[in-house]
Length: 388
Image 1 (tube, rainbow, N blue to C red):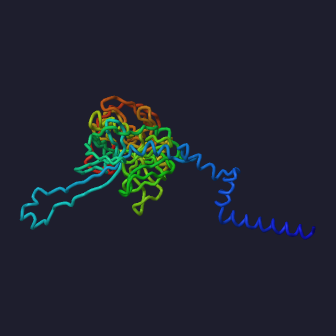
Image 2: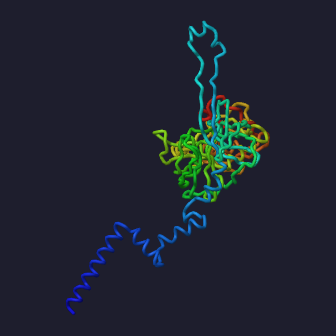
Image 3: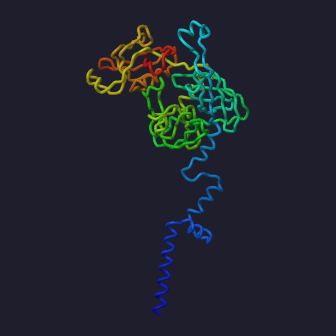
């Protein structure tokens, strides 16, 4: 009896040791065995269920990518190079050399936003390019016509003539919150359509010196060269932004990318389609952020607002009674806390239509009425002009 018990205990010990070794180094053997015997095995049985129903596992984005990806296109551009008008003159060539510029080409991204074939992309993707071609994920290609551009927001609208075009649904970028999951879809480095995921890491980014009007969505979803003009979509596959820029020291993704909110993109889209240009308000002032140091120096009772350091003579602001030294608190119904917010609030005004402006002057709140003019086109780079 004693010998039998000893043999039994040794057998159990060996069996347990073998089971431990298998579970450590070959767990799939154990899972396969339990599945075949009909024992519960969540790891094995859950995977066939997800594949058989066609749904992504919890936390996945397959449905969102499936909805949005067909609407994101590659934008292929080229330029044969401009020729100087005197380049054929032998004396000109002798003194100045060959002035012919080299041909240029590029690949960016775009988003089909309507069944009529309108495509949103970045202005810098198609700027100064002669030939623009759009390629869909199904392989179809078509020449694109430029409907209009808006360098101040770095947006452009193209149009292609193709049948049965997929188009994306617009989301609501105003309801975004930091931490919301997002996908970035585009054609990075020209390798082909790529989907990356991340979260909204910040909202309302401005004063980056990229565009005149800045209200960027910041995301850590990988955005690389070639993604410009592509789609930033939410978990439902709806468009919430147009990918436009990255912060990088190497030229590649470092986890900080910026997208133009779809709320801004829709306004530009509608204006360019209907009018061929974007009309914005302008009042002619030189603004400066109201820092705590400035507020303390001038003994100002407010900490949020925009200090006016200059007013254009006979401009809309001057005619409305605005003076240097005023602190703008509100434009229309919109409160302003910095120059970027003032710029956006003034731009949203309709030229020729009077708007109330609330300012702090000599310690007292004054309410003025300003009739904005149409914002003039900027001859220089947008970020070099900070006048409202």
